[in-house]
Length: 315
Image 1: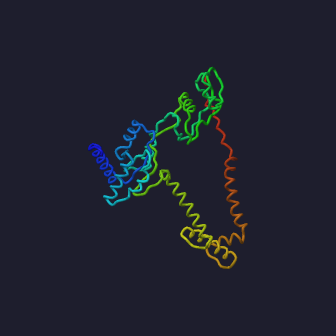
Image 2 (image 1 turned 180 degrees about the vertical axis):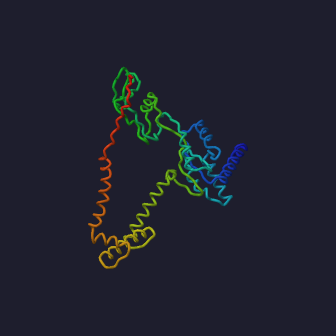
Image 3 (image 1 turned 90 degrees about the vertical axis):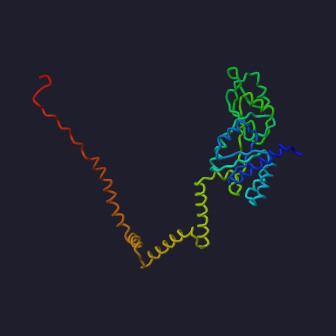
């Protein structure tokens, strides 16, 4: 049987979470693996006052959300229940989701490679000097890394892909990275899911820009127009193309028959005597070309000689 103090803390936590569920309509489910207390404090301070971070046991969060849905009859927060797995927390916000996500991403701290840790990203050691003395070549030999001695220190001959993402860090890799002073991994709150007014979606959706949306809609309209034209099924997307094609057909009929209309007269006149249009265009082009030539051929005015004023400088 839990003590009275624990029951009071659980009840206070439940009340606080229910208040957040009533107040906010947007939230993030975030992973908090390898996040320190100082780092978490910095993130909290940066996100206030419009954004609140709530951590806790998954069972307590699930219990509070279930009770809230039952008591209020509002199950819009129910989709979060299946996402509360592992070391996760909730971030409630009234701000713009993209901006809050970007602010969270700023607070990532470098961390050393520990033995047995699953690498979240690839680790590559750059070529060049290491500053290590030749007596420590055993670390490089154990990892089959080509080295050379240069001015009394060990140099790595070429870039080395030491660890692949998803692999466990071995003792030799961890020792070598520690000696080189490399912190290959960065940890912070990782957005797992995004919640907005009852909808749950991947954080990658927030990366979609207005330009991406316009390009997608344009491509979709082009596909609809192509399908409509191929099947002779008129739609709003294909209507402009249908009108242009109809005009081309009417113009072709007018050219081949005595039927005419104002827009077809110029085409008929051109087909009847193309040379007239060529002659009309040539003088204009020739005149345009002759103007620069005339300007280039115009002689520069000669400078006037100064008249003898009847006195000398030495008079």
